[in-house]
Image 1 (tube, rainbow, N blue to C red):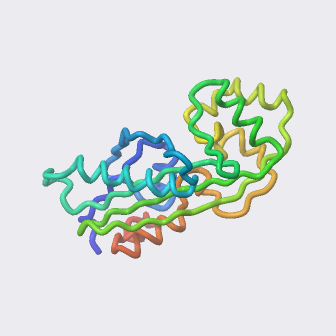
Image 2 (tube, rainbow, N blue to C red):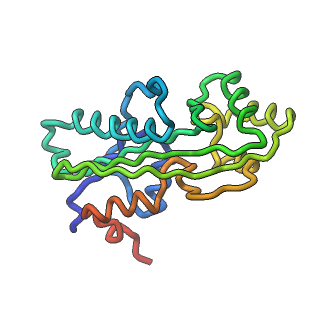
Length: 206
């Protein structure tokens, strides 16, 4: 399929852009969607990731409705949720939130769920939920203090980004690394190619 098809990424995450670039894909447009990300009462973390990724894609679709420039585009969205059991750790905006999350993650397993949603040019909706189990080592007060000082926790689910300093906290991981970064590449490319988006023709020639 030719390059006439455009890809809209319903996200402003630099990490998701970097991951798509790693796969040879440059989104035609970034459309971060401002939606309410609060979990519903008793909502499972996996269900939250699925719902939010779908709502972001639907919001982006509604935003381009009637705009001929983006007619026939693919829309890709994702949402990543970090949880200990059923307890969802939101995006930390304040140091005390990050501190609480890091204490909770210290020395134990947690799950990272990413919902990926793809809307095709003919408006079919395809979704995939990917989960990864991560174990943090037991963190010392000194490590937590220095990580908080780095500011790398700000705005991140679970108050950490595995691609940064917090990668040194990971003792064990079962599943997709790119899922923990924020976009499971294998599953995302599978969704795109399965719906006719020509990924490989976008790869640079050496």
